[in-house]
Image (cartoon, rainbow, N blue to C red; front, top):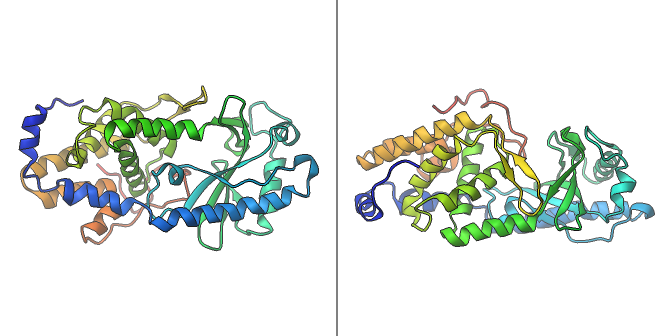
Length: 344
């Protein structure tokens, strides 16, 4: 962490800051938060899609699954989604015996795509947009405009689920434990006045604004590891500019790591294609802080806009820059889209 002055002196030094608690991060987080109706619309859309699969499975006695409400996971379930909140991730939980009947091959490689293809075909009868994404999700756009991303899941005896993702080329089965992930996030939030959730939302805005090639799971795991180490985790939103700056300084040295997935015994590779963007974001956040301390708040805001993009630009009443091309979820471009330069 960068060397800092003591908290008391720091608070006094920041009392006249132009981009303080009420001027930037509180309204920015409010703008990033999906509207209240988004969660209800997403749950309804997920129910439509999984209901379609329930009806398809009802005709397959050997693979029949008892109808159950969709298990919504991801940002909308954890409270870390950002507006507009029109993409919902859910698991379609199947009985354990389906694993061996539907996926007889359990080795590496692409695995048996037959069952996944049958799921896509079954959904396509009711949802013509149904397709398999490069990240292994079955994606469907409903009539309401909500995109449902679905993965077949098998319960694990130890808790959590095995996910079938043969299209990724990383092997057939992946493990996840949404309840353990949520508990880990909430534990850090309780110790930091909600900063883990806030930081994840800000990082998702950064990723979207700049086409950063990093998975949302990596963002979450990095934020959950960083916040408990940050010395000002109990301070107010007045310190969020420092939190963002310090996170990017720290994250730029975390590329290539394997981070544990709660409740699974498995690790997640965070990759390193995003490290240059983290270094650039740190540079902008550091410059913004220095300009703000000199009272040059408009120039400081320019630097924050380079990090957070359109949500902040609209909040400040500025014409937004061309948005980075955004896919539905975690299949991100390998480099910033044409027309949007690297932020450095």
